[in-house]
Length: 269
Length: 70
Image 1 (spheres, rainbow over the protein chains, first blue to last red):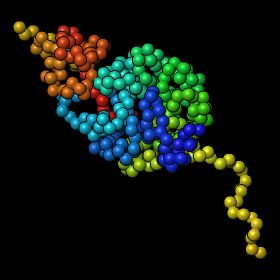
Image 2 (spheres, each protein chain N blue to C red):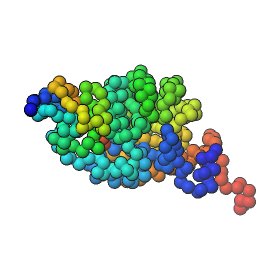
Image 3 (tube, rainbow over the protein chains, first blue to last red):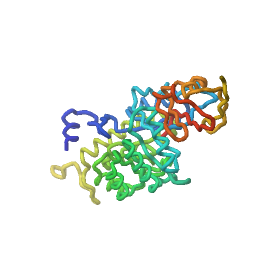
Image 4 (cartoon, chains in turn orange, green):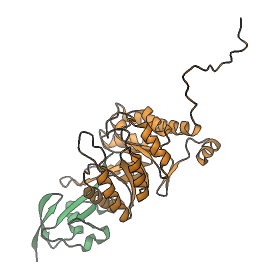
């Protein structure tokens, strides 16, 4: 219970978490896609308090090589860029993409996701295992997006993945956590960090993920597609902190009947 | 001596005046080598070797960078 002691004694908002030997104070990881423009991206990410941001790897625009770049608004010296394999539907494409990302960025910590077909873009676990094996063999630190399947999650951990990231609901759906029992089961069995990745729609969803004991939450659309992204980014920061503290504090027991808080003795007659 | 090199760059055919290296190509396009990564015929080209990696006709190149994503 070091976390609880740290949180209480330092009266701090959070005690931080560690993935692949890197320490982060913020338990919110945010994507950098789907914003109106790069300026809004930068402001929303600043408001979220996130230290880690996910980024995609894409062909440069040869017609306009001087077009504004993400780095101009989200400083890679200030934020840790976590490259993803969004849009990869095969293990081979995911591995190629992350090898390029490693060369572009210069570090080994990456987010692997291999997707199945629309409309759900559900994790393709067979391809995910195949890609994870190749990446681990090649020296990558793999944070892995996966199904809410405790058996698959354990296998990924045993292979050497450094974080397990089950979906709470389909990518970009904003449905909130549809699988709390399985998320909790994965949290309880895992020795590496567990993050809910995908499905969060609003602040209470993020708090709920943290209350289940997740180490962090990863989201993009819930902030980027809010009516006011910068405000929602602040809400998510608060929600993740609140959810973590509630988890550490330990919630009261549920019961069916009322149990009044004020004494029933000394009432006037 | 100038020869023409026909490559495929990010999925599109492109003619270059040869001889040319990966570094020459990036400079000709106007890309900052520190912000991109290059794959040649499915193999990563390490940034430290751009200046000595000569391009040949038939090469398939991918030049990528980081963009916003979730």
